[in-house]
Length: 438
Image (cartoon, rainbow, N blue to C red):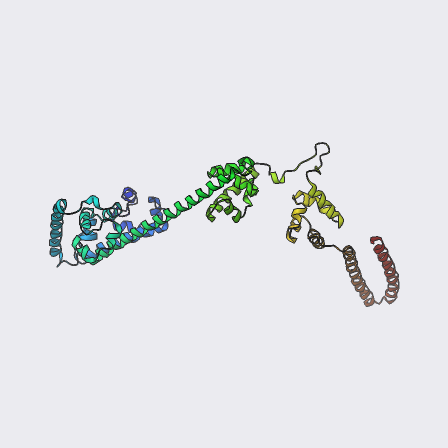
């Protein structure tokens, strides 16, 4: 637990009855989470180290070695291989301790001080419990992580390491710590450069804004409140330059427009856009009025003020030109005017309320500025008449077949004569309808 720097939570392991390596390895994921671990990878990493330590301990016992009593002995000083080597290893331990004692005595007069070691290297040595031999690293001119990683195996042995696996393990940890440190430095430098570029660009824009029209006063209070929340209210005039004066306008800005304002990174843009959209949704739920959809009524007759909505009057005229004024209210309620209508698709027109396919086709042509032939209406009527005629003929044919099967030949012939007169009358009615339409 000390290696991971979490020895302070040892009592929580005791609460889970995990007082030794074996019982800690057998803890479930849920028990680890109760102790305080949130992420699965943390649990797996700690469990793996606990398991390795347990296996090493059990392997040492199986080989007849004495129990390891400290982390320092376990990691660096001793690897008991068998009962036959026990006495020799104990003698080696005494020699190393005596040697280290002599070196520590001589360090005051001949070796660099422990304070010469940089904090990052000292932290790694402390994790392994060997911080007392820091002066011997300084003797090898290894005062930081990089120089310690570059030490040769012979230099590690001069410091006091006897086994190659100990050297490899320490060198690996030193190298991983150095790489993490370099990554953090790179990220810090990059972030500082980005912030510096952003500040310089904003400063240039602020200088330009003094000589150009547009200020924060042009921005809606709700939008200005969000910008203030991000601490960027000073760039409000640049939102005004992009015609983004309300929350809705700001939400509809493209990524390129955000970059023109001064945002360099996509995650910054997405974060601000998300907050803008959430704020807009909250205002809408609270009953706030959207300036872009605000309706203005005449107090006298409770009708739309034609001076304030010329586009809708124009749309009404367009619909009247093709005989589709019944859809005007639907378009008007949806807040669609002539300038927006030309961008509508067939599905969008259907969602407005135009269910008739032929009417949608006509509206698409109308909004696109294409000429609509006058015969379109006649063609629709003619097609409808043909369909009705086919249906009636099919019904008559079925009825005549039934009468013939029943032997009513005379009635069938008389029906045909009447049908002929009816067909003539239908033709005359059709001709009259065409003339009326023209």
